[in-house]
Amino acid sequence: MDLSNSTLLTSPDTYVGIYQELSKYNVHLNIFERLWASWYAYMQNDVLATGIMSFVMHEAVYFGRSLPWIIVAKISYFNKYKIQGAKIPTAAEQWDCAKLVLLSHFTVELPQIWLFHPMAKYCGMETGVPFPAWTTMLFHIAVFFVVEDTWHYWAHRAMHWGPLYKSVHKIHHQYSAPFGMAAEYASPIEVMVLGLGTVGAPIAWVLLTGKLHILTMYIWIVLRLFQAIDAHSGYEFPWSLHHFLPFWAGAEHHDVHHERFIGNYSSSFRWWDYVMDTESGPEAAKARRERKAKKEAKKVQ
Ligand SMILES: [Zn+2]
Ligand SMILES: [Zn+2]
Image 1 (cartoon, rainbow, N blue to C red):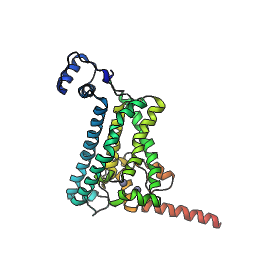
Image 2: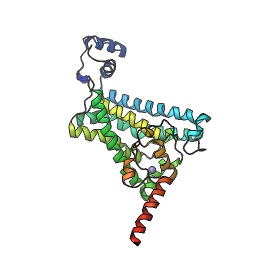
Image 3: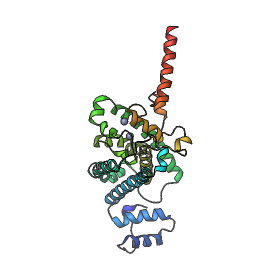
Image 4: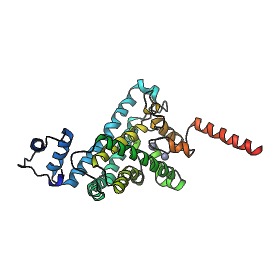
């Protein structure tokens, strides 16, 4: 069903009215597909429909996911899970962070989100209903995670090169003990460069294969936001994901990066830092020293 040409027999002017009307003639669609199609029919402007949906989704997910971490910081029971022990963020620190993040969302990200629909259409992304099978979406999202992680590793590592660090990346390292909301606390240039991995992976995919639904991209961005916010949370639990998926980076991985300013450049996975020998932390440093000593000993022989 092409949403831009969705014709309804009568044209109710409320969202609920459109939903009811659309449901009568589209019994094969599930509730999410109906809600989605009604939104586009209600807006009568696909660029605006996608733009508003993207922006609201980004804000709701970003602050919605940061909120539990703000609450956790207030409950002393959780202190034992805090990676950098006593460094609990203060209310003032969190408020300063929220202000900069909001400023960048409204000035840097909003105009880009507005360009999203035309760009998605231009690249051949689908926006209609029905949605693709969940297995297809899962496969696409897995690919995006791997591609983004690779982009993030190299771009982030480059940003630790002196001049780039001073002029761009230093802002993100304002908090040596990060907290959830600090995920997007960064220079607008950094937001754009690193964001290119998140947005560029699906675009490259649709340009290469010609198959991608914009909903898959939304779910991907939501999961990527969860990943980034959780990696900055500062908390490591016995039930944290990397205990079950050893190659998942998580908070333990990125917290050390903020504490030591060096190593652990990846976003979602641990393999790039492992392969490139840039793992951070005392254990990694010890292993590196031992390897070096072995090499030296071999040279002497
Ligand atoms: Zn960094
Ligand atoms: Zn960070």
